[in-house]
Amino acid sequence: MSLQEFRPRSACRASTPRPYRAAMDMGHFLTFASDAEIAGLWGLGCIIVALLATLAEVRRNRRARIDGIVGWMPWRAIFLLAAIAGGGLILLAVKGLLAA
Image: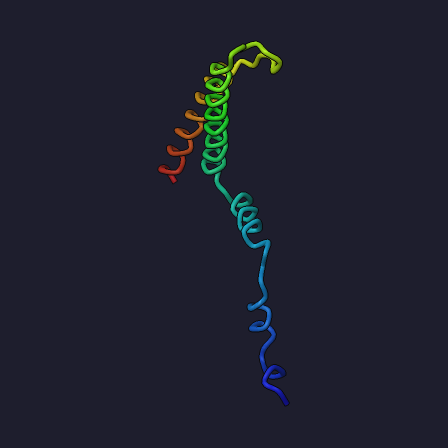
C-alpha cells in the first residue's frame, strides 16, 4: 500500500489551487458588509469618477480645437457632483464605522 491511500481527503483538497478565492472573498465581504462600509465603497467609486472627470477636463482643455469631433461633455459639473456625493458618502461611512 502506498502512503497516499492513508492520507485524509481534507489534506489532499487543501493542496489544490483555488483561483476564485479572491472573488469569493469580495462577495462574502459585500454580503455581510455594514451599511457604513457599503456607503464608503460607493463614496470611493464617486471619488474615482471625479478624478476621471478631472483628467478628461484637463485633456479637453489641451486640445487645439476644444469643440472638435469629440463633442461636449460637462466634465466640470460631473466632477463637482461626483466629488460632493463621494465626500458626503465617505463622511457618513466614517461616522458609521466609528459609531459601531
